[in-house]
Amino acid sequence: MDAGFLQQAVDLATANVEQGGGPFGALIVRNGRVIAASGNRVTADLDPSAHAEVAAIRLACRALGDFQLTDCTLYTSCEPCPMCLGAIYWARLKAVYYACDRHDAAQAGFDDGFIYDEIGKAAEQRQIAMRRLPLAEPDLPFRRWQAKTDKIRY
Image 1: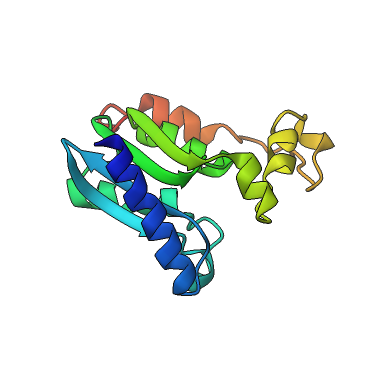
Image 2: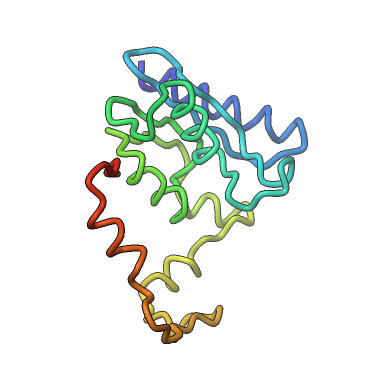
């Protein structure tokens, strides 16, 4: 069954290329049923965060009315990039299956190696300038969150 869902993700990626999108496809499955599926939407939506995995996670969360997908599995045509990996952990998916890996993606022109390298650097050493500025109460939102009794934890 896993191979069948993974093939659907690859087929979705292939169809996405034919429709002018990127070569990525992903689906979210729960209890043997596809809850959500999406191809890469970066160029179609003019949104650099609209990777297939993120788009599928967004659709699945809306379909299930929840921001956590703890009982769902992601099938994706390629090993998730660092951004998608973060979304997968935040959504708390139980498993991920992928067809191609990051090296296959790099050979096709989608090299995320520099992002993996940047993550390990201190903020001030990254290629994109990241500087912490002093403010009077920068932690006020966190203190308010901690004091809030009716918060929804995530």
